[in-house]
Length: 410
Image (tube, rainbow, N blue to C red; front, side, top):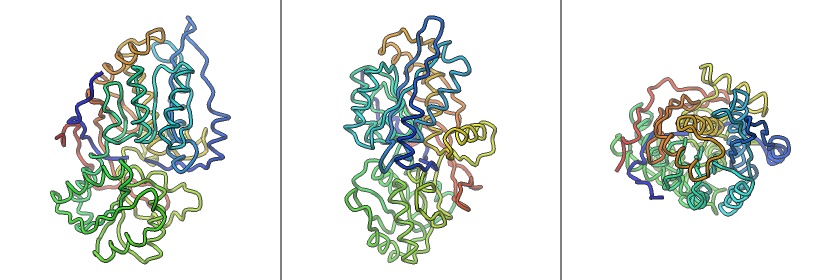
């Protein structure tokens, strides 16, 4: 297959999670939830969907959200008659936020008979697995892999927003809603997700009248002490610190900023989703933190509330954006398969070709918005901003950032 044109990358910003669970919970999930749905159509055939995410380790909140969100969609679809009259078998694997283990997880699912993949959850793992799904001509939709190269192949689509768009739209939201004029950034230069968002934010900030007064980097090997970065931001007299990072270092930054007496606003992207349910994290430190996301469990529409209730009843936690992304991913597969009349007896390559075609022709009324996809695998939907108040997400009243999948294409 041909490489996708990267020019189609830009979309709207932003995601990532209020789903806290520890490694023991992940192990329990594997024992109790990772069972195949075995009901089938009259000919005995079923669709086999695999999923991959970090169910243990530092990014477990993300992976658990993805596999549970996909599971809920599978259960609903099966209860409603399946896809084109065929039931779904569903199986997921833990990749521990490790590229090699993610590829191993994919191989396990392929040996099981997977015909399509929901995953991987994180960007680097999704990119690694896409090399294999491309070789195998298997359809892949990543709920939350946001790096540019996650969808570089024609067989891969995504539900979340791409990194450059997250940075661009974050700067636009801050500028258009006059949230700050002088901003500092703390980002992970060793991570493609973080560095990609940071670069796009800086590029857009000047257009929005925002001065980036401090750009402070850290790496995966230096993500526990942020005193130097916070001091630089304090010395620069910034009004806001932009955090295009994951929730674990973000929680550490908020804790250390409080101890240092640094009184500024904080704004993040989808990677911050999940911080509220971290074990031993003081939620009061996140009060007032803002982030762009297409999903909030506090939304009052019937679809969201039904999803949240069912998710809580089953998993005993509140779903986050990652769960919603995965839920929408499975329903996107259903919509594309029904559009192209896909059946389980088709070859992996024929299923992939049909789903890739169907994805560009459907519109999914998802939890994360009304979604369409272009041929580059990029979604088009509206982001919204949330603010953390009283230990929970609340939709911000200021205007949404308008978006188009081609608005910022280069």
